[in-house]
Every structure is written in structure tokens, then in C-alpha cells.
Length: 389
Image 1 (cartoon, rainbow, N blue to C red):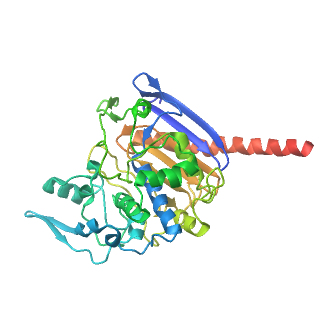
Image 2 (image 1 turned 180 degrees about the vertical axis):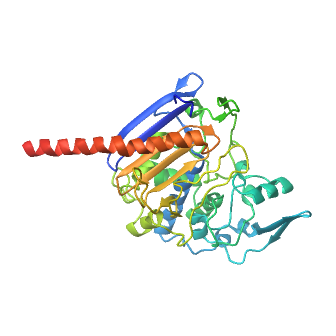
Image 3 (image 1 turned 135 degrees about the vertical axis):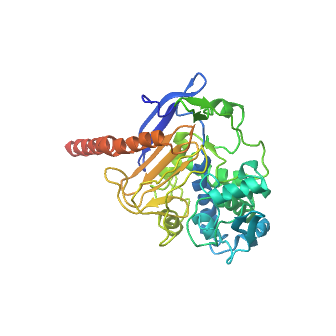
């Protein structure tokens, strides 16, 4: 905040059993300070919720990870591979293997985002295609960048996964998530669309100007879309998202003790599911994101919901930790080995700009150098007091 890295922020740290620390600083919207009630556009932090929704159906035997997506969502038949861009236009072909539910969950289907993939950006410009922001089934018919299973590539897979959940689960996506995830987890402020009060609580989105200051950016999703894109449609408060993350510290149980997933299915959400493939660095094709390599130099894989670090980060999260972020600079991690879940949230662009990432890294280091030692001291003090009595 002092060096202008972000206009406001809300941060929280929790263990499986309780919130350990929280703070809110700055002005979230015109004249309104940031609080724990501030509502954030989660963008890609929505994806983990969509993945959990799908895994609930897997757990119940209603959905098979090896099922071809086209058998569940017939509109998927229009999806093809973009072989190359030529002066005459895009050269397309059929994929050599079907895209499966597992491919969608692990971002190995072949989908990308034009914010990170230059060839897809060229395709968007050349074809003037509808984008995923339009909220229609047609807007999901992006081409694949490669054949399914060849490599990891982050993209719109979870938006298609939301359609799979609706078709297989037999209920509207928002109803399914409310009944199966939000209510059990106590996520009472998490919504798909905003009413009057929620609009008042929503933080402003700002973009970094050339002089380093922040300017308001007027971005609004289409009202009452044909589909909810589980790649980025949710709004939530920091406490609600912490409640979601705490389930992954409790092996798939909500605070009430209700089990959301069986042990075996839960492991698919916390263990590497892409084998020898790795999550690499992200390029930037435009001004709204910055190039970034999360935990640079550390091997990173993907579960059915999260990026997973395969080595310790010295002074920070342990090997096996889960993490991801949203495009408007909401970030989180879950360190199951250390019993830590944390969120660090604002609403700014570009995504992962260096100044923001420096603040986020400093926050993570502070969690492990100050908050965790304080927790250990409290626990030792409580144990000593109990022995004396």
C-alpha cells in the first residue's frame, strides 16, 4: 500500500479449525473502506469451485472421468483443433482423440486463453468470434491449440465443465453449487449474480495507468447469461473463500463436519493428475496481464482443481501445496503440510504485475515468519496452562 502496489487489499490466514489472522486496508470503492464484507469478482478462483462440483458427481458415480465430453454435451462436437493460421484464414482439423472430463479438469484438453496464447489471439482477431465473456454456449466454441493430453495449457476448460455438471447433475449450475457446496461450507455471500446490496458491496476494478496510479475500469458481465461460465463467474468475500479452502485442510469436510467428498475422490483434487507434464510460465499477449512464472524454478503440476508445487519454497509454502488466482489479482494457497490456507485479494489489472506479486510474496513470507510462530506459541501456552490445571 505504501509504495502504491495496490489501492486496497483484504488478506486472511486460517488453519483447519479457525481463522488465525485477517486485515483489510485501503478504499475498496468510492468512499467505502475495504472490509471483510467487501465482495470480489473471483474470476479464475471460480474454477476450483467448478472442479469440486464435478468431483461431487464423480464421487456419486454419476460422472466418469474418462467420458468423452461430446457424449455429455453434444454442442462440443463443433470444437476442432487450430492447426495453423494462414493468409487465407485458420486451418482447422479434427482432434486425434476425444476430449474427456479428465482433460477438462486438468487443463490438458487443448484449450487456451488469448491473454497468454498469441496464436489464439490471432484467431480471435481474424474470425471476430464471440468470446467466453458473452455468456453463451456458442462463445465456448474456442479451438483447441493441440490434441487432447499432449501438454498442460490453461484455458476455458472449466467453462465447459460447468455445462457438464448441469447436464449430468440435472439441475441449474447455481442451484447445484448452492446446495452441494455453498450451504454446507457456510459460504453465504458467494453468488453468481449481484442484487442491489451485493452491488453496493462490490469492490471497484482498477487498472494501472502509465504514471503508476490506478484508474477505474468499468467492466460488467452480461446480465442473466445463457450459461454461467465456471471459469470465472463467481463473486465472494474473503471469509467465504477461506471457508472453501478450509475444506481442503479437513480432507474434504465442511466446518459442520459434513463430508463433501470421499477420501479417494478428495485425493484427486490434492495430488498430481498430469503425470510428467508440468505447469510452465505464462506469456502475456496484451496489456491486461504480465508474464509470470509462479514459484519460478520449482516443479509445478496440476490436480483436478489446483496448481500444485512439488518442492518446498524456502521460508514459504511446503511441497504439495495447492494454489491459484483470479485475473483481477485475487490469490490463494493451501499448505496442507503446515495447516495453512490464505487469501490475498484486491481488484486490479494487469494480472500478476511485478509490483503486486512483490506484495503477495512479502505477505506469504510474513505468514511463515510471524503468523505461524505466533500460532505455535499460543498452542504451547494453552498446552502448558492445561497441564498446570
